[in-house]
Image (cartoon, rainbow, N blue to C red; front, side):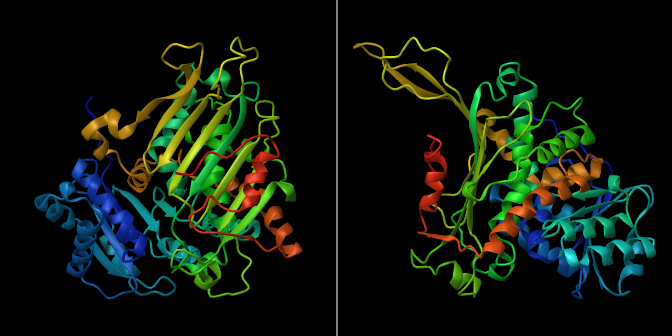
Length: 483
């Protein structure tokens, strides 16, 4: 199998916050990989914009160092790196003032795609958007990319949407969620809608429940000030996990078209029931393993911010009524893993009532660390002695299935930035979608804040608070092991 890399149109991409951590770790190394693959044309350009007074040479040195640090050695070609660096420029910019904007305008070329990546704090979105227009840097076809957090509640999300809408049309705004750029997440749509094997079974009649897990081993150390204003609900559930839930639960769109897909996702969010307090478990990791607990990392010894949350969520529509979705995410857990597990119901009648070893069929979609899918099915255990059943996986690992070509699969940021250049908004959130997600999330957060609930402590290196286990056990179900 030969992978196809289709070059995008010639572009000028301006990265505001071009010397920041996200640009250095993800955006710029990712763009180098797209240049290496031939997808980014040699006459496209990348312009870093930040407060620091750097020369083009300074910026290129910084990007060269980033490539050395974050791109595997086997993908570093000195000649191609040199060619890539020659396409880079830098402008010192004052996001809230007038400095640097005329210099930036002078670099913009006519008749190429103009894209502007806001890798900055949301408080600067409005200032940058306004100056792009008042200084004539952007044109009617320009695209802007905005990073999360897109608001911290419904009111702030609406305010941000309104600020951006004053300067750009919705068709020009790309709200990025890197989870939607993962290969396996997109494959979820292909598995559902391109295979007659699954779509007829994709409903409450056949699916017992769905689990979505995003587990991390890292703490919030170094990010405590931000995280204490966010927590797991705002940081992960309202955006990343909500998007995964939508892709699993949405109806087939009439076409693989940006607005058609996003229309169906919006319907899912609007069909979510309010979550009862007894269906929520919040946790906060304790000290252990030679590290401090959450309160030490947050520098707030009375913090009630959750580093872990588990929820039971119900979708009230014809397809999913009666099939719960269990979501959990947390820091300092046993292993780093992200997966979606669709657990099917028992057959309506089993001819193997006396057979040992029966377990339900489960379709597991692994998002990280090993992207792939496996379908757990029952077979007869080999050997004599009667009918004994055993569960085996029908496994598809991208690394094994694609061999060397797996190295060329774009990571999430690479794919999404190339979609911006193409003008494809399918994997980006629309404004009404963001607001609907906050409208569902806000009452949940407001309820526990009003009660003053304190998260349950849990030991690092475990699967989370004990009460999260009971969230499943009381329904005669159990979480999949985090490993």
